[in-house]
Length: 237
Ligand SMILES: [Zn+2]
Image (cartoon, rainbow, N blue to C red; front, side):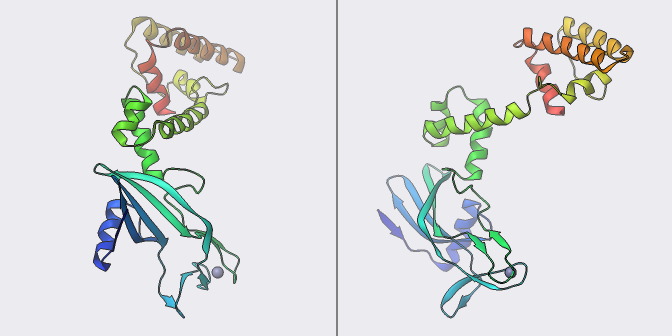
């Protein structure tokens, strides 16, 4: 393991490469076999009797930093072929003793996650383009287990956006003509046209729901064939 001493003027460059914003500064970097261990701390404005402090946004009280019981570590976006890990040993959730305002300085990760938000985003972008978690892991440089967890969180999110949810407002919008899609298959074109007419004629909410359900049934039955149109609907919801 090798410790890299940072020159003062190198800090902004490394911060830029890591994309962690101005609220954090790099204290030290260790290089191990093919990976970088970066130690970060919240940016302190100046020394106060030799101690670093955070200035309260609300009352400008000087809140002193304290160490965490246990340091935290997240995997971050790789730099070239180097895996990057961000480590923090300073408490980032501060409570102002003067005005009680709470400050959470950690904006680039969740405390209980193993990866940073930028890496999470990179994985979310890569997942639809690749076939296996192993492939994604290799390309992005993370453990397949990490990819699996991101996949799980993505699935949980898409449940919320389930187009077949009971009150799928977007289906009603589609039949009202507030959302437009371009069906490529002739049967779907016909069905959509008919459903719109029925929806317009419907006198009760129940009848409207029936038209929606009939259309949804088609999408469920011909899932593969109508996936493109389904994506068009979801993207407008
Ligand atoms: Zn305060």
